Image 1 (cartoon, one colour):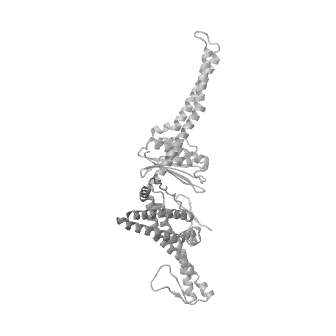
Image 2 (cartoon, rainbow, N blue to C red):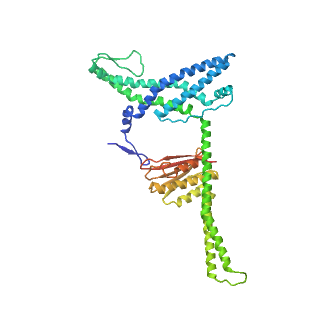
Length: 448
C-alpha cells in the first residue's frame, strides 16, 4: 500500500516509503543504464579526441613561436580547431541519444576569400575554441565516468562472492573495494566472509548510480556551456525568432482589423448611407409636402440604428487594440476583469511602479486569455489572479482548482500567449499536473 501525505496547500505528497524505493530501484532504472552507457562510450571517444587535438595544438603553438614555422603552426592549430568541431558533433549526438540532452548545433562559419582568409576565420572562430576546450576537459571527466562504471563492476563481483564459493569451490575470495585503501583487498576465507563481501557489493551497486549521475551532471553542464551555439548567437537567434513573431502578429492583427472593418463597420456604414439616401428621396424637393412620413421616419430610425451599431463595433475594435480600462492603470483594469469573470476570482495586485503601456497591454490580455481558459477548459470552481513586481520584472500568476492537464498546443491559446510574451523577452511557465491545480506564470520586463 502506498502512503501519501498532504502538503501545506493540501496537495498529495509522496509517502515515507518513496525515498527507500527510489534508492533501492535506482540501479534498475533505464536512466541509470543510459548514464552508465554514456560513461562507458564517453571515455574511448574522449581519449581518441584528446590525443590528436592536444598534439596538433602543442605542435602548432611550438611552431608558431618560431619564425620559420609560423605558417605551419597556424595550420596545425586550425586543424585542431576543425577536428574539435567535428568531435563536438559526435559528443552532442551521444548526449542527445543517451541522456536526452539536445543542444542545437552552432552555425558553421562560411569564410570567403583565399586560403589565409579562411585560416584567419577559423582561428577567430569562438565556437571552435569552445569545442577545443570541451575536448580537452572531457578526458578527465570521462576518466571519472569510467571510474564510476568500475563501481558497477566491483559491486557485481563482490555480490557474486557467495555463489562463487558454493558453485566454483573458491576458498580465498578477494573483496574488491570501490575506493582504494591501503593494505590490499581483504580476502574471504569462510562462507560468512562471502556474505560480508556480498553486502559490500550490494552497497556499492546502490551507490554506483548516484556517483555515475554526478559525473554525468558535470558532463551535461559542459555540453550546454561549450557545445551549444553560444550566448551571443543564441541571443541573436532568439531576437530573430521574436522579431518574426512580432511581424507575424502585427500582420495577423492588420488582417483581422481589415476583415472586421470590412464585414462589420463598413457594412453598417454602407447601410447607413443607403438609408439616408432613400430618406432624402422620400422627402422630395424643397417646399413640397412629404408623401410618406412614416416611411421616412422608418428610414431615419434604421440609419440611426446602423450608426449606433457601427460605433459599437468600432469601439470594440479599438478596445481590442488598447482596452480603455488600462487608462487608469493595470490594477484597476485587472479588478474590472476579475469582476466581470464568470467564476469567483481572488485578485492580488502589488505593482508600485507602473510598467510601460505595451507591457500593461500584454499583461492585461494574458490575464484575460488565461481566465477565459480557466472558464472554458478547466472545470474549476475558483481562480486566483496575482500580479507582483519581483527582481525587476512583472510577475503575473493565474491559478485554478480545476482538473489540470493544461499544456501549450492543446487548443487553449497558451501557444499564442507564449509567442506574445516572447516578443518582449518575457516567459510563460505552466504547471498543470493531472488532477490539478493549474498554475500559469507570466514574467514580463517592466519596460518593453
